[in-house]
Length: 108
Length: 350
Image: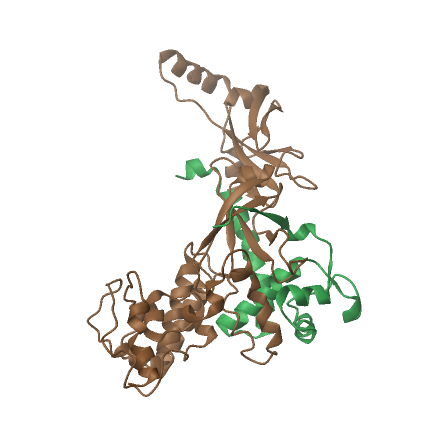
C-alpha cells in the first residue's frame, strides 16, 4: 500500500494541448486523433492545420471515452461523438434537477 | 507423463483462497440454451445499461465487469462448452473447485488461450477455469503506479484497425467521490481504485486541489516517477463526483440553499445568518420578500477562479399556532388583511 500522496491537478486548469500531447496522453497515433476531429469527438480550439491545433485539456477525457465506447458498445467514432455530447448534456440536466428538487432534507 | 500434462495437473495447486462459482447465464439474464444471437443481444443491452461512461447506476463499474466476464465466456463456443460441462447444479457464489483433470482431454489448452481482452480484472473463478492473466508478469504490477498507470501505453503501438484497442482492458473509468467541504477548501482524500489489470484494488492518498467541481477530471501524476510527465502514460485520470450534501446543492460552481424565513421576516425585512461553504454569513432579507425568490451572495459558492455564487431560495414558513393567543393572532391577520393568495391563480385561469 502506498503511503505517499499523489498530487491531483484539475485538467481544466492546464493549458491547451497540442495534437502530440493528446496522442501521448491517450496512447494514440496522430492519424487516429485526426479522424476523431473529423467526426467531432474533439474539436481544436485553435489552429487551422493539425500541426497548429490546440485542444482544451478536456479533449483527453473525450478521446478516452470515445475509445471505451467504441470498444465496449461497438459504436463508431461518429456515434461516439454524439454519445459524448449527450453524456455531457445529461450531466448538466441532472445537476439542474438536483437544484430544482429543493432541500434534500425535506425530500426525505 | 509429458511436461504439458504435468503443468496441467499442477494447476489447481496454484490456487489459494476461496473461489466462488459464477452463474454467467444469470449475469447475462439468458437461458442456458440461449443462442449466440440472444447472448449477443443481451450483452449489448446490459453494456448500454451498465457502461460506466453512460450509466447512472451506482454499481455500474462492478456490474459492467461481471457482464464482460460472462460475455467473454458465453460468446466463445469453446469456453462456453467448457463452462457448460461443469453442469447446471452450481449456485452463484458457491465454493468452487474445478473437477479433477479439468482442462485435459479437451484437445485445447485453456491457459494461453485467453486474449488480453478477456483479462480485465476478471474473477478468480474465470482464472480458475481459463487461466490467463494471473500468470503473466505484468499483472503483479508491483507497487507504485506501473500497474494501472501504464494502461494507455500499449494501444498506440498496435495500429488502428477495428479491434486495435482490445488490448486496452485496463482503461477503466475511475471516479473519486469528494465531500463538498474538501472540494471547496482542498485537502487530502484517501481513494480506492477498483482492481485493474487483475491486481488488487488499491488505495492512495490524493491531494485534492481547492475548487474542483462535479464532473471535472483531475490528473494524478506520480511523484518523481520515471517517465511520468504532462499527459504522460504514467498519469491517471479521475472524474470528480461531489458527495451530495444535506444543505448545499451544487450546480457548476454555484451553490443553492433553501432558506426558510418567517412571514414577518419576509414582510418586514430582517438580517439573518445563513450557512455558506466558507462559514456563516449575515445577509439582509428585504422587506416584502416573497417565497420562491432567489437572493444571490456573490462569490460565496464553490471556490475557484472565478468562485461561484451562492443562491438562497427563500421559503416562507408559517409557524403552527399552539395556543389561544397565537390562534387569535392568525385570526386578526385574516381579518386585517384583505388578502386572497389565489387571486392571481384565478386571474390566469379565467
